Image (cartoon, rainbow, N blue to C red; front, side, top):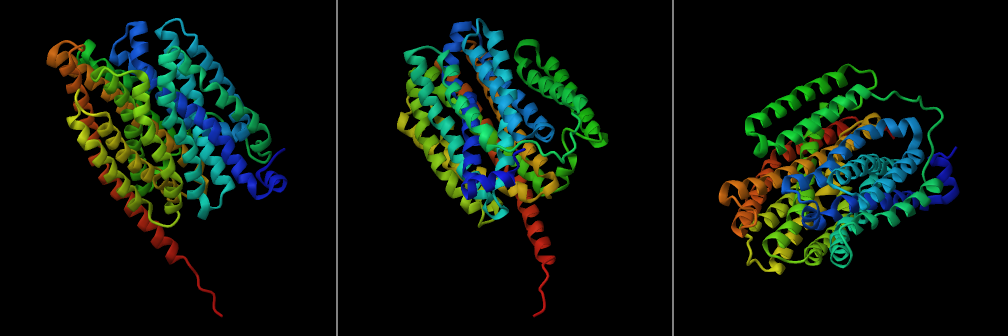
Length: 483
């Protein structure tokens, strides 16, 4: 049996970096899979003759399934240990990637994306659990920052690499590119991740809760998607159904002995605020990464390579900011750093409301750069700061909830953005091929994201209050020993 202590004895202090590298490489392959497909969306849309709302399911299907995996992760790690969880999930992920590359039609591709996302949902929160185990509390922000640097390299380089693959080969190549990273992660998992603790009781899986949550998310996203096709009355029926299922899920978690989601994490208003901030982060990261490549190709008529290259500088700068932001998170209050990041994100997004066919590429690149710097400043403090608001027994649940919230934000952001594009095309000019209709759709989508960013100021304030309360409590319990 390999415990964390025995692995430290074998590898010394460097073990924390070996463990971090292992989960970082695996997560990188999955983050790469979640974003690299964005530059291929126009080609896939043309290949399978699908519309914008159908195409976005290739992104939201991945992220929605990832949400379910994230909340199941806590049970899986306790039941099987980090090493077995990582190896099995990575293996299935690689098989799903192969299936996606060979998909004969749209339905098979969506299925492969859902399977990819479900497996990715186990790996990402597992990475934060591993980092929390191998780094002491005062260095945890640094560990998360280094991990985030490696992970962000995936979406930073992914679109540019994906654009080249689409131009030189085919959209199918974007599925193959994640496989080498996954194989390296598999090779490192066996020697560097701990096995299941023999003293831990094997928990039960809350299967009814998982089914309720899956149904909640499915009806929510479907309700947001079908309004244009079947009428908004039908859409409201699905959304009301989703709300009812969500109520059932919460009640199930409150009275279940071993819940899928421990509702106690939301007793802290500060943690609840940080979860809402994480939703904003997800919407920014995924919706803008989805929208900009489409804008460059559909509005400005540029190639997939150009669309991918546009995203790369901002992604690289964001990756470079992560380690510094992680260190700052160990020294300064997380809400203040997050506020700086949020304001930068707003400054980067606001000019995009006026983007059109004539907007120079370097201006788009500059606006993306400002926004991504803000995102890099914001993410590590929100993640590390939210976990500091929880007691140790809720740490695993907390990491899953924060990651889950970021994914739900991403799904909602992409779903609503795609809906804005279709609505503008149909209601304004009745023809999505008309550039004016496309521009109007993108401007509406960017406006929606800007309003979401402004609304995030309130949960950020809640997080600030929670952080202050924890600091006062820690000060109050300090005992000064007499000399």
